[in-house]
Image (cartoon, rainbow, N blue to C red; front, side):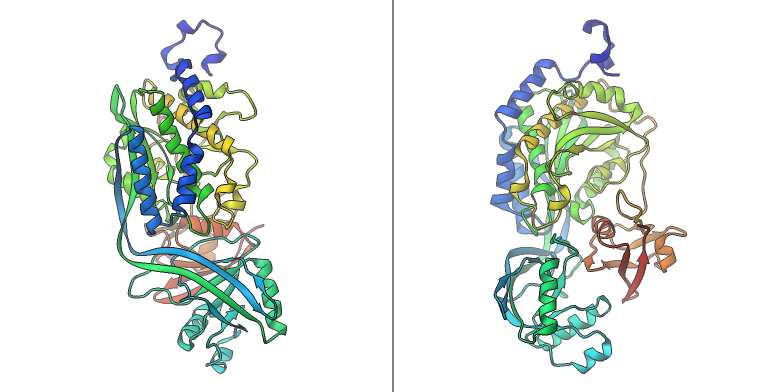
Length: 540
């Protein structure tokens, strides 16, 4: 029950039920956050000035250094970069464009995977239908020079790619599942064996049009220029950390954060420029009002999230002996919709109600609620690194008019997708909640806290393979008895490569590939140096 619901004078409330953010403080947070907001300025610089921030890219390093310097300029203590790992190969994406040049002229919308080969300048050539069998491939040797090959069967992908490389072909033209051009990629490459075959993925409607033309017209030509570049490592990777040091319990912490890395098919705005910007703005607001939290509020921007929570997991592992002094971790990684609530164990409700007392009373259409759950469940963001270590890790509830699936990892994830009033509101809620939890008399309770560790699959659906993944995010560590994977014949030690046409580089890729498209899936693994393909079918 919240303090506002008790029909007794305020002075007689038990200390645990008193709001942990004073009314005057909350009004100052609101005024600073709504009237002097810098949240869209943070976002603008991050996604428009710096751009997309793929793990291993120069842009990510630049973004981390910029965020560190911004935290320091706000006056936060010990703003710093902490190294979480290294990448063997760096990848930087330059501009890309493509078009049909004959028999008509038409611009093409497409993408390429991260850590994949680019062209060496504009490459123009005929569109050639792929061989459909190994026998047909053998009989057409020498016909792929200077060509773009379309409609390659998944079972022949490797062999056709090898033929293209051997014969001097330009590359492969593949399709997306729908009108969205999803960006993915496999970072596990080495400098002495870099990808060579260019694979462009056309938006589905354009692919179907081009494919139909190639089936009836031998004069179809296309031109692509894909400026993908590799850089020799090792390339250090960082998390960004800055503190508002606690006045009474400086060695106890509340973490506020989001991941600063992104995929690079667009500018990485709603995943997760929006969360990075609100984290920075919450820090700015609290510094601007002179907040003096009891505990230290630690602001963290993690790298490598898109490849399997690499930065946050490495950081928690390195600091595992300190986790009993962390009260909570609050992660914003759900796009630009406004923060509409928080979900925790029922035993946490009294403390959460006092921490969010004033937020719960906010008027207008942007309501906030506290939900009770029976366990913290995997969602696919950095709070999971903390829940795995026993720290209550919260992934904010969000609501609003934005369509997250439209922008998530797609060509539409640009600055125009961000909603300023939602971003301002979220920063105010995050700042208030962080201060409220930091001011609680005690750490947030762990009483009856449960953490569900689900077998690999797709959140919110029945499409779960029934596998656990190793630390690299792609090697199967275990197979659940009677699961889809077990029935198909997958084994521990198999390394996931692709699901349909999507590369699998980690748990997030696995979830997304299983969740989208039809119920029948083609899953390719590497076993003993050979690629093995499994056909699986999920319930509708």
